[in-house]
Image (cartoon, rainbow, N blue to C red; front, side, top):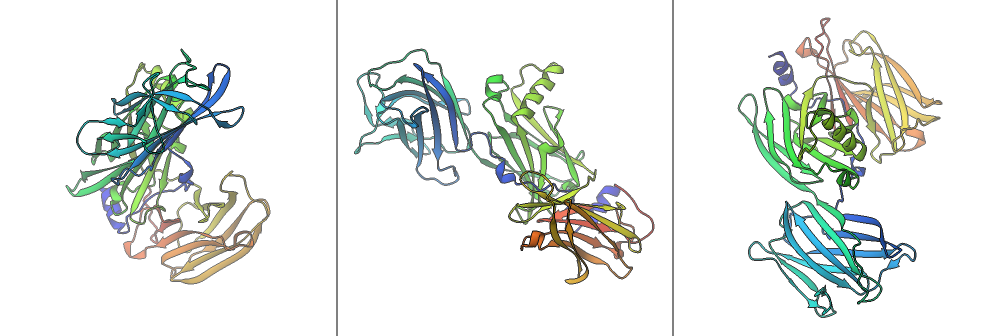
Length: 458
């Protein structure tokens, strides 16, 4: 196969056009904490915040559930509040009990065990049999609970407020969903029957049925998901990460096509991250609430009214898209880089076109001073200092026949500071005719330039 022969050339094994975005800002649904907003209790507006700490479930140590209700008018905790709380995980009920908080805060100490029954200890009141804590006796939940991450589903009702005996009825059940990130590993086979380790980090719920089809070069997996309007309105984002080794060249391609339940995702829903891990590529699925609404409508149009899960597919693609994008390490400035002609050849003029943007807003940064530098063999072979008055500029350069090997395109002294970022080029004359490929290592975008006159395009 031509594709495999070409990919095997890439001993460094990293192919892609990369849109680097601050993935850290794309939080998972209810990641460690969820807030129920504007609950109406006899004309009083309150919020209920539910939290599980710590979020790291890989360590066998004590955890805590904290539930707090706040009066929005006074911004103070509510008084003498009784909650009916049900906690569910993977479709199973962990507990459903009354809890009383004189100061509006429920603290449940969780002591996970590997065996035994789930029990609650503490003090109980005489009105509703609600658990409450004292200085000497906390509320403690013990048993095989919180042994793994995933989605923890809370159903919460308020039964008293202001006074211990002030019982309120028919306020409805409010939902809080807290995600504890899960890391799952899967050993798959390549076309050559070699082992490759994939990983999925889920910021929503556990995934299942992971598969890598080496013939079609597609990764697929499934995750439980409630497609009801009520749940979608409660979910700000669904975030899944697919990890695999950078040395696995067959799947390190310029871009990917993502689908959920057979529906094509927008390009912005799939992002590639070669910066966070030196040895792994991470491909992110990031589905906003608007994406979820679109997917629900698209499934209804094809006759799927009540899907029960999300089936993710990630398909390798060889499409190259400009501009290439990199950010400064502090994620303040984004640099967009393109060039013309698309295939760079020694002995021909190349125009590098670049734009400077605010990394958070995407707006162009006018009057941006810069140093545009080309480096080979750790030596500077070209430098242009300029000022992009309208936010963009260009630089012309012709690579000579003797200029081969790894080449860096570096932007330094951006806006008169020490901020910088880097792209890279590689001239590989020893391979003869080379496919034009773009790939990224860390924050750098790498281009292979072929030297012979014949060019094979992906």
